[in-house]
Length: 544
Ligand code: GLN
View 1 (cartoon, rainbow, N blue to C red):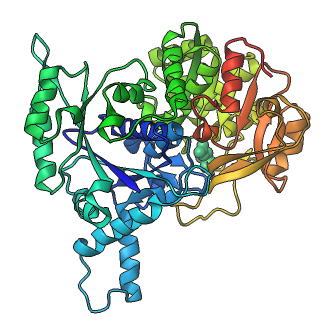
View 2 (view 1 turned 60 degrees about the vertical axis):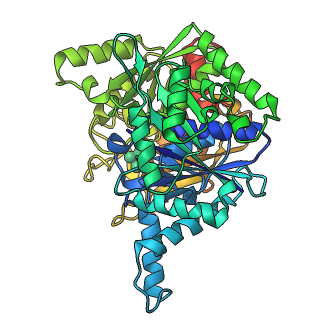
View 3 (view 1 turned 30 degrees about the vertical axis):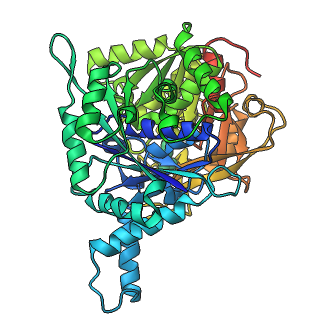
């Protein structure tokens, strides 16, 4: 097992996750099986209770793990399926050690960060690194370990120490330390400044870790003299300094690293040329797309695209498959509501009306929900292609129930507990006392209820599909008959035949909503069917 540890310096947001995933792609192209572990030094057990506003999207795994969005990068780049244990958090390690202490495992000893937490971290890494993540059942050859945060943070100190010790546990030759840093550009001639990188490397070395590779984020390719200076001052070989400069799209990143000789520096060579050819084809295909498709995303964290990262990726995969350049118009759902600030209100409605397709993604809480209902109703009544995801299915149902069934004032009990005629209700099996990890989570089957419908054809005619879930509420089962009689058909249900998973309106160019989150399983080159349907319909192309 070869471990590639990716740490970051200077500041966050350097694309450490994309760099780490791209290195993984190159290792895969060298014929190796790759897995990954993301370390998040926060005290939460998992990302499930964290606001997307603060921390970006909560990514959901097959096993129901609610994890950091970087695991989504790994799954998409490496085409693997990870488990909740692939996301190590301080909350998880401390819980494990404290549980062991209560059992009496350390009887007589003082339990300390070093060695007990640091040992637990190393045990965790070794165990998880060997688990198969590509469905082959065999152990991976390479594990990419991404350390969240910035080296020097108080929170990440125990992990840096654990990783320092780890090189002796598994052999120095089996560990490659990659440090991702920033090279800012200053002055009229655009001088590339190396000092921030020098400082962060010094800090890392002070903690006992010598980087083998430096990856420098910069706007333009590193100049030769910058590279030489970094090598001299940061104790790395000149061939081990890489630049990740601005590129038109992320598919260029693995190619850019390989052009600078990354595999050779690690003593490897590309064997599966086909894999990098695929990436090259995708990168250039995306660069050349000109014809636009305009999708209105109606959400509530629209200033922060990280909050909807996988949805954006899935839309991009679909647009790539449909040969269209994706343009996303971000709409604050609240701005669509009557009584909102007039200029913002007018602008939001103009955007909604100008869109080729409308997407209402998942969400929680009452803010903006009336605006989302209006957006779904706009799409339904004006024959505009619509995809609703999770909450997007629930608001579509509420709008239909209000306006077609005449159920005035109906809503979800999430927004009005006392609603007398709710279209969406709390699922009976969900905990009312604990919020962490208690939703209906992870991969579950959806069985098609009809032999033929648009969304089933998009899924290649399959009898059932496995997609990932994350919700507490569902369409009120008592209403289904009336909704279906009026034309809102529930073409996919869970294995009990009770719970609604997919709805569709046949007499509409594309009105599809799913209770699950198809975005989590979308891959470049294998677009998620509900997204593909939306983009095809929105760009006036025939659907299967
Ligand atoms: N808030 C809704 C529920 O819990 C929708 C969840 C979601 O969109 N992920 O059912």
